[in-house]
Image (cartoon, rainbow, N blue to C red; front, side, top):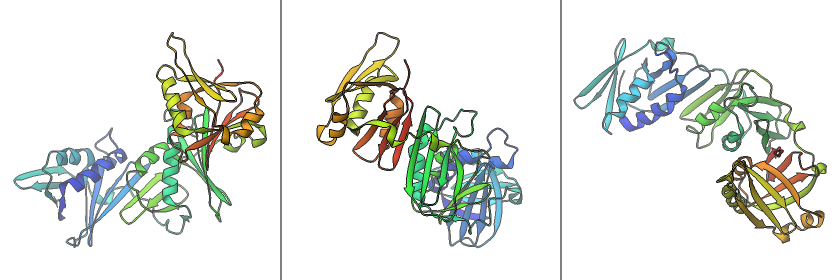
Length: 366
């Protein structure tokens, strides 16, 4: 192997590969990146078995087929200290040489044939979902996923493909978020998508890609990249039973997104919890904490779009809630207003809606 490549281009790719590498034991081949040449193509691969990434670079000067591995952390450290210009990669039996002008660095290599296999024979299992919808939806519900929980369903998202729609779901047991799209499908498929994979997939897919599914993996692929993540072997909770029925939502009010964000941020400056009082003409916000610090603010009810709410309310409705839960949700909605639904029992779950995106959240009892 003897190839030339722009240093910054290679550094960027290998930097994005770092989360895919085994970091505790450098003797493992999964701490290495596979560098492979095929006709007109340079391919780089990294995996720790749970997630994996392949990046392909077209290069018409490549005419040989070779494989070599190099420690991912070591090569990144080398590249960071080289000039922003072309470098040359030259492979030998047990090492990779990196050359730039008068600089020459040699790194130990493993045999490329021993590198872990990636999923194969998946091309006939394509899922009929727009990839940008998947990635954007997973990104929106990401804040709800609890990374440190021992419960599998709390530290992963759910993708639930039904006959006529697809739901993206996440919960930390105190709140539940769901994004739904109309999506006619021949098959009903339900699988969890790891939190870690949500973070990494966003780095490689900004344009349209194909989504594939097999027994153990989800594969996302475009011309330049192939990503896979193993599917967690567990069942998600019966989330549809948690969603309040419309008939139980007695009060529904439409609220300006930006005004709500501004008010909650004021309260959040002194307290994580907020007491909301809904009146016919206004919503008041009051901090709840054990200290002497206090924050109070209010916004006016928009009468033209809330006639039904104004007619239905006799007295004020009070609920207490964690402001972060509401903030993280409304920051991710696309519309200017959202609907805040309150059950007749003020301690029951509230239902927030914006187009195809809902939040179910449990009030705080104080």
